[in-house]
Length: 232
Image (cartoon, rainbow, N blue to C red):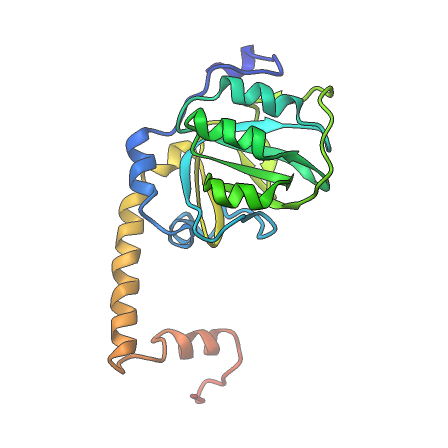
């Protein structure tokens, strides 16, 4: 997509993260992916799953709306492909819901991978029963308006993280992490290595070995908490 020549508020062409990368990344916890991505990309904790069992992974299909209006979300639903994750910059507004059971039933039927919304939803009891992955700031019974323009498939801010269309989005019980499309494939081997390291560390702890981190005293010395000749 040539963004310089596409100034329309609605961009139809998206370079998505590769499906095989999505599949590989979906096997890892968001905490692992955030760590190997340099401890960045994790959305603010205000954006949480409606149920801890919810999981999602897919390319971002980005939507920017004005607070309290969901016109462009309806348009995005009509455009998104199966497997996409709607990532919605709702400006953190929680004075009304931008999506509810009707829209999210439609998202599930369309084969979308999930919805991440920096804003509110409603009909939460129905949505938990639906089982479709929804991550939001909270809930509000008020409904939205449907007449204010916004943008689709432009870079957005969601949960205080910059997200571009096509970036990798992964969500689990801890929250959501976003990884740049170009960087995503390079992280899966690193993630696998970190998982192996953490399993070994936990096994050592359970067996009573190396319970104290090996790096602890050196870090305390470097921080000035311990003097040169002091130890814990």
